[in-house]
Image (tube, rainbow, N blue to C red; front, side, top):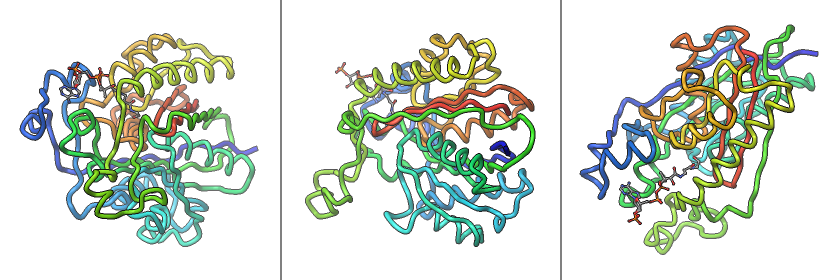
Length: 326
Ligand code: UT7
């Protein structure tokens, strides 16, 4: 049976930088509050003409080049995002056209900040079943477009960016070992963007009521995120016969440094084996794990055959984990 192996990885972040000091001029906040409560120091903001598929295109080009795979040899494009260019066509189809990936079947995944893990898990199954040889999995977000810049409880948290991996069917024992996905829709109200769907279609009223922006009850989300990420990290390790000491690199979703620390402690993985870049990018939702994986690989933190543990949590609620023999 062929293994789903990450053969190429890429990332792209927009050039614009918004620091905590810049935010002090926009809302009633402080660099000190943001840094101590979240770990974030700055985040990237897309240019006015940049969309999620534009950021994804740059990340995908790097990933394809590294994998040595041509766009026309892709069987699927799976695009995880909460900020697609538009409701339809899917961001995946828009990206397909930009890449010239004529033979790929394309669709988006709506799983909030867990989107990349969800997409990875679907790609894993397509490869293992023999249905696909090469899949492009993307996580890309332009969250700056759905943030209420007058709401200090959310606008300081999010940033824009994209990451992409090519997953190919390979012989050998490297690749995705296991993925686990979980959801609990009963918590949907705690983190949502209510406007623009069939419940509240765009109208003057929805705009006046700011329904097209992220609404989050941060503290409640925080508690659930910590527990869910800790539990699933422990569960995936146990299920596959590993312990924290076996993990070479923990690559968690970057939503809050305090959440990351809690996960590290629960599964016994020290800071020097955890990849953290939240200070530079904030929470980039579905893009955060692939951006972190790319940086870790570029900076020499990932060697062939390393055991990598990825864990995410997001709107839905959704959460999930992936174990990869790099
Ligand atoms: O990505 C997937 C899902 N998202 C997450 O996982 C995010 C989870 N949540 C969090 O990371 C944290 O809950 C936040 C960083 C969002 C907030 O931290 P917190 O420690 O939970 O703060 P809080 O919401 O309980 O607010 C504490 C205080 C409040 O003031 P009072 O009521 O104590 O006077 C807030 O009004 O901090 C205030 N506050 C701020 N102060 C300065 C909230 N936002 C700000 C701000 N600057 N930006």
